[in-house]
Length: 182
Image (tube, rainbow, N blue to C red; front, side, top):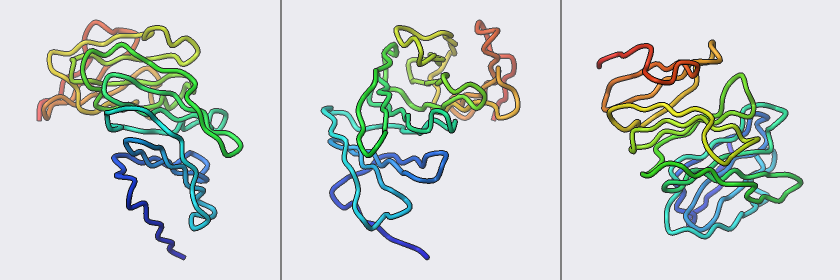
């Protein structure tokens, strides 16, 4: 059965589905909309947000133990939200980038790690247990448009830069371990 639910006034810029397949989050400028995928026609919940910036990326934590957390980037900041028992709230914010955050990705093997990329040329790895500053900082010559963790190696991630790809090992943050020219 296909169900279509319209959010005409949402002006959604990003969407993510949780690892349990129970909820989707759609991001708009003024609200985040949480949809119960088991009963999408029954309405949705809204989390209010105060920002003049659109959300660039949103992603639920992929680990069942942390399935109630999702991250949403807006300009130079990432807000970590907690969704539980039908209500949502910002738990904390990650701030460190000096330009717009282009992408984010939760770690595949470690439920507390989140990576962010930005046009400011930095890629930051954050531990959500201590959000004061990034735990690892990677620096490239050009800004990164995308970042993704490796699904087979807990220490590696990839970033894309103007059509090129860099492979990084978080244990060796000074330089990329591999450079793939497009």
